[in-house]
Length: 247
Image: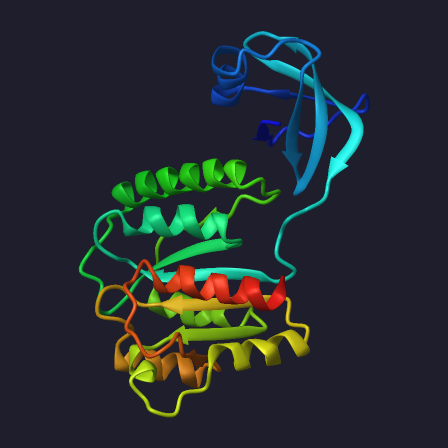
């Protein structure tokens, strides 16, 4: 069944409305009719609903059935130093499919790309739309929030809000004796951590100054193997490893 996210809550009659692009998709693309069923997600819960009426707004009503949540048992936020090109779009789309909870772009020391306020808002809106489409496609009940780009100092400040913080540091990959990421994840799992922040640099990786500041703030390095991964590959590798460990 098609899946749509709505912001409007269900009323006392267990009805809600679908508007905008979703309403046009239901009526014009899917050509659904009254009586057809679809999945409506509100407040991280997926309800099987029946269409009651179709127009510019689609009125739907709960059937009384819900679909179990496919969300990870731990919230994993991805912080990425602003990369070049459309790499953030790839991270947003595939990260959503792999269970990412939120995306936090930040201006890293080695970031070549700079977003001004106006440009940043438009790009964030586009990334948020990509996240919603990917969440619908992968049958999630949560759409990852895409945060407007923040400064590195702000990233340091929010790191303390997480149970575990890991840095993807390519210098760690070069060591002969590395602590495997799988081993560190087992400790996180055993400690029943509920939130994880994964930090990745842009092209060129995290700078030495940034790594030092993050480690002093309580972060740990994570070894993603002996090979150096691209800026858009490393977050997806780490999410896959976490999914394997927790799910």
